[in-house]
Image (cartoon, rainbow, N blue to C red; front, side, top):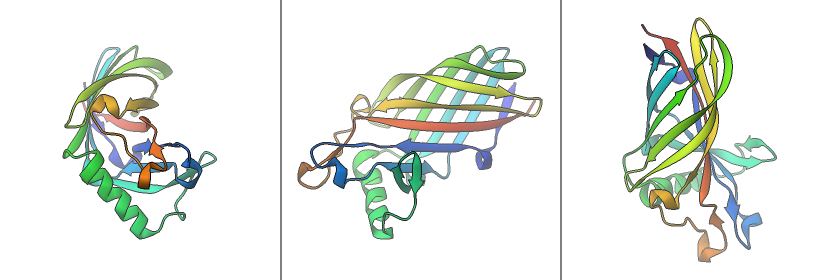
Amino acid sequence: MTLAFDRDASKLRIETTAKGMLAKLAHDLAIEASDWTCEATLDGEKATLTAKVPVASLRVAGVRKHGAVDKNVLSSSDRSEIERKIREEVLTGREVVVAASASGVPADGSRTVDAELTVESGRAKTRVSSRVTLSVTAGAIVASGRAGVSLSALSIPPVKGPLGAFRVDDVVDVVFEARFTRAG
C-alpha cells in the first residue's frame, strides 16, 4: 500500500551542538526543512520510506535553549549567513536523501521499532540506526523519532567558528515526525 505524505502536518529538524573551549559563546541551533518530500509504502508489517530534503529549503528556526527554540536570539543577517554556510560549505549538494526501512508496523495503535536509515548528502552516504515510534490509526500513520548522524561519515569537514574558537559537534540530531494517510 502506498501512503500519501502530509507535509503540512510533518516536521523535520536538525539540531546542532557547539563544542570547544569557547562553545558557551556559540549557539546550539535548530534548523528546519520547509519543503521536503517523502514517499512511503506499507507491506504488511514492513514499511519503507524515501525522504528528499532540498538543501535550499533548510532554514535556521532559532537557538536551542533549555529544550526550547528561541526564535529571537539571532539577527536576520546572522540567520542568512548561517544558511549560506549550510548551502555553500556544509551541504554542498542539491539535496539530502534518506532511505529507511522498518519491520513490526502495528495494524493499529502505537509501537516503537528499530529502523535502518541510509543518509546520502551528495558527498557520501552513511547508515544509521534509529528507534522510531509508529502510531497507526484508521486514517493516518505517524512515524516519529530522532537519529544521530555523523557529519564526518558524510565526508563533511568539521564546521568551525571564527579562529576555531568553537566547532559544531560531529554528530547532529535529526528529529522527525512524518505523517501519512492511506492512499490505497
